[in-house]
Image (cartoon, rainbow, N blue to C red; front, side):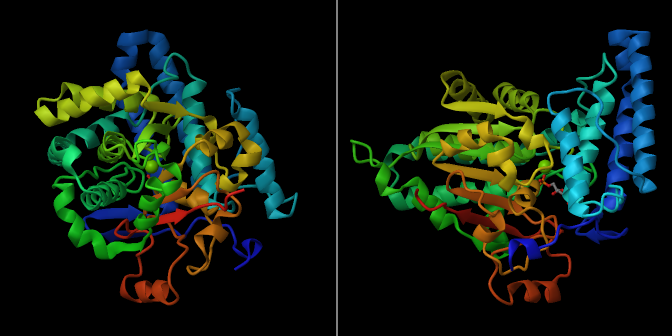
Amino acid sequence: MAADQAVLRVPPPLSAKVVGSFAYLTVKDRLPTILTKVIDTLHRNKNKFFEEYGEEGINAEKQAISLLSKLRNELQTDKPLLLITDGLQDTESWNQYMQRQQRLLGDQDTVISWFKSAWLYVECYMYRKIQEALILNPPISNFDVYKEGKTQSFFESQQAVMALCTYLADIHKNMEKLSKNQLFEFFNKLLQVSLWGNKCDLSISAGQENSQKTSPIDSLNSLQPFILVDDSNMVWSTLTSSQRLEVSGKNVVERVDIVLDNAGFELVTDLVLADFLVSSGLARQIHFHGKCFPWFVSDVTASDFQWTSRQMMAANHMWMSKSGVRWQRYLKEGVWCYHDHPFWTQPHEFCDMAADAPDLYATLREADLVLFKGDLNYRKLTGDRDWSHTVDFSTALRGFGPAPLCSLRTLKANVQVGLQPGQGEKLTSQDPNWMTSGKYAVIQFYSPQPE
Ligand code: F6P
Ligand code: MG
């Protein structure tokens, strides 16, 4: 299918379907539900704002709630989207993007409204408007309305985190003696743990608890049939590519970038994978990319990143705390680096990155491999278009390819490319919700042609 034939997806119809033990709500339900939770969180923190800032704090809370209630009403009644007015670094770019969306509609007289615009844009816009409601109301501008949920998700996954850190410690003990095959086996397992870690996000369950309780390693075999595309061999080949032979004869890539998704258990799985990559010598440096402000309920911000590694260090479990200590050291020594860039909290498809965020594109070009975590990144990689399932991943990327890249994603939205002929149809007949339930996953790789 040609790129211009694949249409942008608009919000799906109002409905709620029960998948497993969670009620996965579709967009028109989920977005107001998220707004209601945000309002409730602000209200519950009223006393805290008073203690910290006195009357000023209470007034700010009231004003923010009033803006958010207005936003919820506009959403539910399909009102036109309004410009962002908080004068932040990205405000101009958001407002220009609105004009772009207007042009996409092809008719200057049609207003961009909540239900008549591209779903990707509308969803991102809601999170940016929540941020605006806080920014416009100092002194509570920096309050993270999703912090409680992220913290809870981390603590509720403790058993799984302990099991994972113990597993990592065993690998560390034998690292020197591992054969290439054994290394590959551990790599595969930890890549899959990071993949399935993506099941635990809070935006799909509209903020409901969604954590990992069992040992993630033990579940891998039973989850294998749900990986619809598995390009892990290509990821491994990239990491062990012979072009990068060191003088010692050891294969090593300089740099792996991880575009993070959710805090809580998923972040721990990413850090464990990153730890394995550097401690095994498969990579020299890891660059993490997180969000500049709270986003899609559970996404990682700089504060979540720091908080997680400090919590690990302080944990009352030997292998968790040893992992945390090592991670702090990696950060201090520059083996690991954390970055954020406003582009990650904008609605753009990634094929726009080279033109709209050339500095970020140039940064990613320095990587030997970029791992994109999660569903939202997949939607942005593929432009969230209504592609035929058999379209190549490379076609759907539409020129985006700063470096070899791999998407590690559990399916939560109606877009999936790179399947075998008939595979999508078969899945639809067996399980009509296969694209949105988070039950299936892909490890999907692409490498740009050398220049
Ligand atoms: O489907 C719900 C949703 O909010 C999607 O819009 C979004 O793509 C996804 O959840 C977020 O998931 P992830 O955290 O994996 O990016
Ligand atoms: Mg997320």
